[in-house]
Image (cartoon, rainbow, N blue to C red; front, side, top):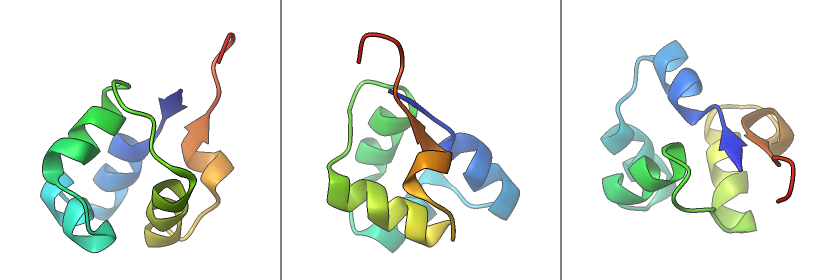
Amino acid sequence: MKNTIKVERAKLNITQSDLADAVKVSKQTIHSIESGRFVPSTTLSMKIARHFKTSVESIFELEEGD
């Protein structure tokens, strides 16, 4: 699953740690999501989208075969 979390973080000038604190997960979790090694739960996806004041679909995109 592709995502634009890194881009969204850059727009707000926040770190992985800042986002992790905001959505109550570890920095390692955010890093794993950004790098595509971990697919977040629906709840976590919604928390991330809410933090960026956007929709889940604008941050996460299914890739062919997902």
